[in-house]
Amino acid sequence: MKKLVFILFTIILLISTCIIFLLFYKTNTNTLTVNIDGKTYKNTTESIDTLITKTIKQDELNTNINFLAKSNLIECIRINKHNFYVILKTTDNVYMVLLYDISKPKFPKDKWILGNISSTSFKEISIGKPTLKEVMKLDPNGNYNSVLYASSLPSLSIHHTIDGYFITIEYSFSRSEILVKSIEILPPDRNIIYMALTENDRRDLTQKANK
Image (cartoon, rainbow, N blue to C red; front, side, top):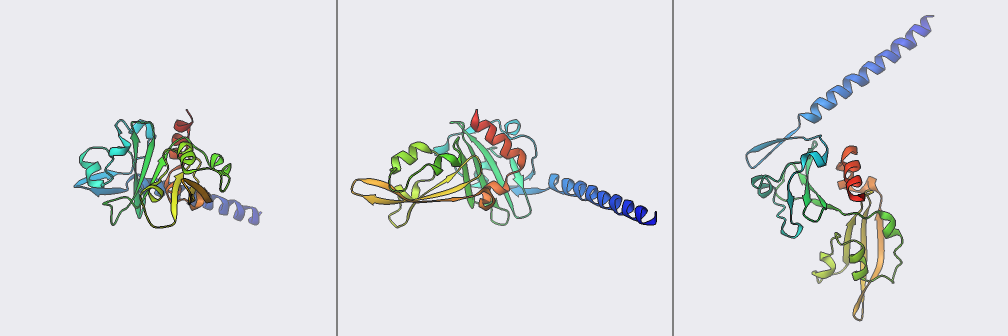
């Protein structure tokens, strides 16, 4: 009987500890703040589509955090201990996630553009066959700066998929064509942007992209 009472007491104690921890975590998460250009922003937890009311042109975007604050474009912000990220919506119905370091937030240290492409499309790419033009058609929201504008090797394009994969494609130059040389696909648990998103964010963005 004493053993049963001890087991029940232990279970109740563990449950109580978990509840206290969750309440403490939720309170601290909701009260996280960051100061940008003299304004204090609180961590937002509402749905992305509920928070974002403004759209911007992707090719005219200035990612300087002070510019975004002065332009009142910071509507959806997520904050943790070391980083915060701002989610923006573009006029071509694409979401952009900008990840900033709290200690040095002037420009983002990483960027994720959510189009409507999944990792499955990239897994079908064959080495040596597709050209750069075909990859750009497949994912118009990829980062192709290294291939198009940089003179130094390697020539890479960078892609973020709606299911959280981080993909890099290296290209080789053959006569007048630029061909796929290699492709590396990293899973979501190695993607710093995707790991920063909440479960609600992932759900909302994926549902929006699939409409």
